[in-house]
Length: 412
Ligand code: URA
Image (cartoon, rainbow, N blue to C red; front, side):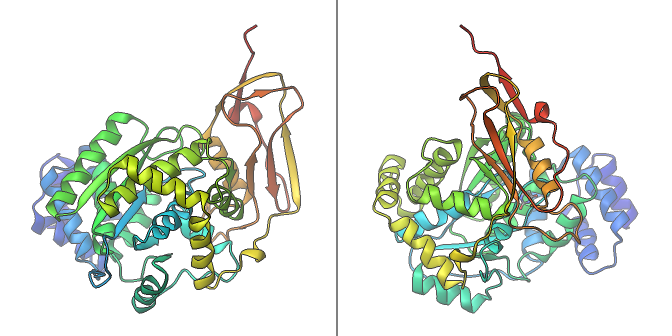
């Protein structure tokens, strides 16, 4: 039976909900082997899935664990998810802005995947910060301060946890049906009323083209309709990293900068304002323009930053304990010109070599290492000027500057 199911998908045929249940539930309870599931996942990657199959798969994922219910908390709960990017610390900025406008935020975040860092890893760079709140603690904290950012509770979509780990090591991550079921199941199971998805497109993202991103957007909106949840999607560029910092404690520091009204004009600053305004528009049922005014006001009057500090404090984090490695190396520009490209993927790889993420499951993250970009795209640089500082621990990895930075001679 299992072989027949795999074979059917290999031939590009549609699987029924019963067949999907049989193989996926069988995998979760250990009756289906890793190699069988890997084979099915690859067949899905190559042959895709119909909308019906994706709806069924999402349902099977949701039903694999608990479904949280926060309907007793007043207000529209808007959740946000990013498909993953390099230097993406937007959740750390947006969640406190939205909560400072009295929209309840319950954010269950994940760890890094591949070259992309995860919100939970970044928060763990704050000594003491608890990422393991249980359902009762989440409920209590939202009632008290209107915001929680924690790890996914252990029984939230266990199917996704198991399948994701397998996808990560079988080159089956970049599949639109699998991404859609993975993300939407977690958002629906965690009790969101409305969902905003930041779909990253480009060299440093899971999806490389706008066409793929549009397909993912369409199916996520359809899944949302099926569950009666409004879903909005924003496409954002991931050819270049987001902001100046890559690496856990550096990214927390940069998020605090944006929350205090600095770095407004970087790609990070602009994206944070856009995403926050979209969430506020959904949460308060107001226009995006009105929402954007509210976002700007709460950054300028300090309430958004105050909410971040309150959040960290409530989850027992000590901001004053954040550490940055003392070993620093400056990458200098080999020539004079204009910085026309910064390769997100190469920087993602470099940050892994520095130890900011995990290459293997058993690796331990070094929160103090990372990359700070002094120069951003479009800026002029002189020969010998610092382009970036690397924060490293013991040994400096080999760096090929030409793979990372493109400097073009200035037209005179
Ligand atoms: N983020 C997820 O949570 N799941 C995916 O499959 C891809 C990105």
